[in-house]
Length: 255
Image (cartoon, rainbow, N blue to C red; front, side, top):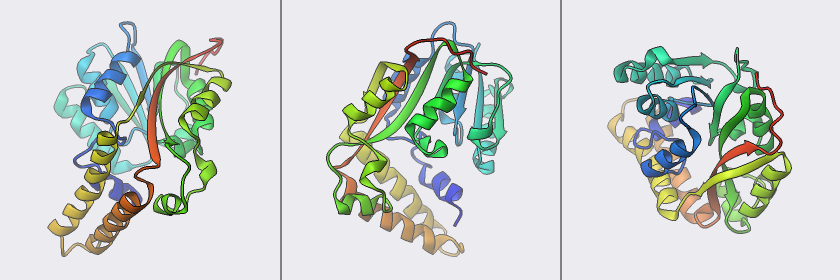
């Protein structure tokens, strides 16, 4: 079963692909998008949930999304058309690492998609290439709430303890890379639990509703395995922080 299809189904009831309630998403967008923000880029946009919210709230905003999921981008375009914002949204079916915009952006997002760049610091390097002087970055990244156990690592698909850091070390690395956090939000336990129950529940419900689909059994198995890995393994270990960042020494030219 294609991983993009799994993700689309799993996010049916939680279109923001991160453990954030709607009010948290709005708070972060309010911090990211100032009165002078005109161009926004989302690297790893999926179905464009962040951009659609931003475009709907700000009629002068133009946005660009980049992702490898063709169907996700098609759904983003369909939703943008229904909302009347499609003319202000550009969508690119492309590896986010290879995207090259014609001009820098006032704000660049990458929330829950740092794996596309092989980690947090390479993601910041990629963002820096696209960000205009004085611009803001929004980055969402996992961290360890406590030292991960073998069960936690197994539940996360066999990750290594070195794949993430604790919150303080994560922020220290961001600062050492030349960025200053001007706002941040740590997802709450209810947000983390809601995300996981939505993810596994939507996928399991789809399998129940489509018993004759060739992918039904695999979808049910993926949901059950993910749910067990979370509840038995990493529920007390996995955390998520979303940071609004400015360059500490803003000498970048973007583009």
